[in-house]
Image 1 (cartoon, helix red, strand yellow):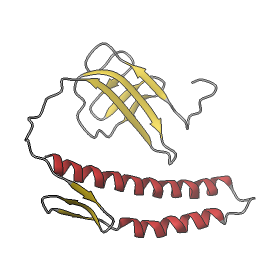
Image 2 (cartoon, rainbow, N blue to C red):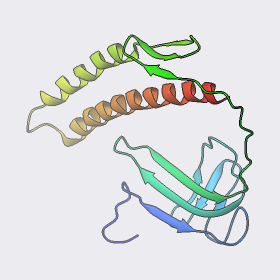
Image 3 (cartoon, one colour):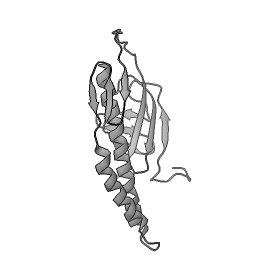
Length: 167
């Protein structure tokens, strides 16, 4: 480990240009990934990794979660064009209204999470100067996790609606 890196802030990028799933340093096993400097790390895959492994990047977000980005070289299948098109109107009362009359409702998840986030921010701002740093850090990460949850819910909503339009 280099002198400017700490165990909490791991940033690693490695190249693999030999076999489809592994070389001597990087390997993707069933539920683990083998990385240099770290060894075997448990992995929750969102999809199956197929193709020649090119690059692996590990990053840590501010709330303390680690994410692995895996770049592989594969053959891309082409979809046939349907020839149909649709207009989309994005609004405040409805999430989206399509030109064919389909209406996607706007979920009001932000209202409930906004109250919890405001409460966490008030608790954090009222912390005294001489308080334990660990307690303040726990409150700070709690607020970050709530912000991260709001961001994930928004992105999953957009992703799910757009995939239903494409399929």
